[in-house]
Image (cartoon, rainbow, N blue to C red; front, side, top):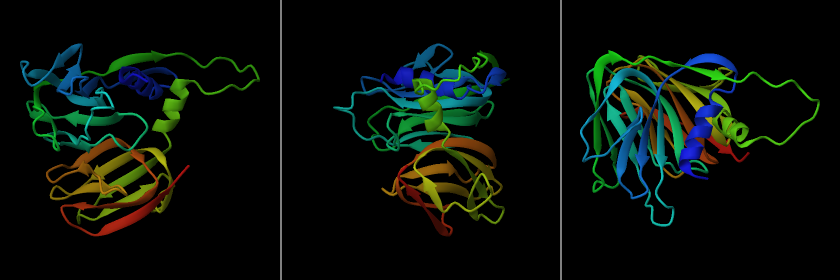
Length: 259
């Protein structure tokens, strides 16, 4: 499936509840078909050779996607970093190469999109203005009356299920200790594979939190210098996962089983 269509489906899935709602605008970080890095927002596409893109500060839906052909595409470690933001993904955790996050960009700040594993790919820098972005109002269709019949899920329904397997809560306490619990408040112990929304509350400016996959890939939930809340969508594959404070700290584990 073309990755632009995947992005549209995933964003549509986030609005399936119905009615009018305020939605954060979208900024997309792309590995282009030619292998170069680019940033897209508001109809603009910029790369390392373009003039620096300036975005209003504030909350955004962040999409990270890879449009390069699977045949020649190496494994990436894509990072978006700057004040209050420390995203890192290899896009290897799911069945497509698109992931969705929620991030807040600070005013009058500079951010970098780069590939940590392939420094030869030129990084793209963008900046924020002092102006805050306004959410957009999106109308979604009201549910159709029931016909008493069932049918297979459409592609948008499938995307919604993949996005909303469950919710986890990660907390970095003032002491620096990290806790990971289910929506019911129980410690994460045994989970079913799929995409989860991880809601993070970081109370310690000197420590952050990270998840480590069964293949030792690291997802940085937050880093030193960040306090506040953010939400990250992550695909949990079957195996033994770890979570810990960053840097250092006690390591705890949970198990993900195949669905």
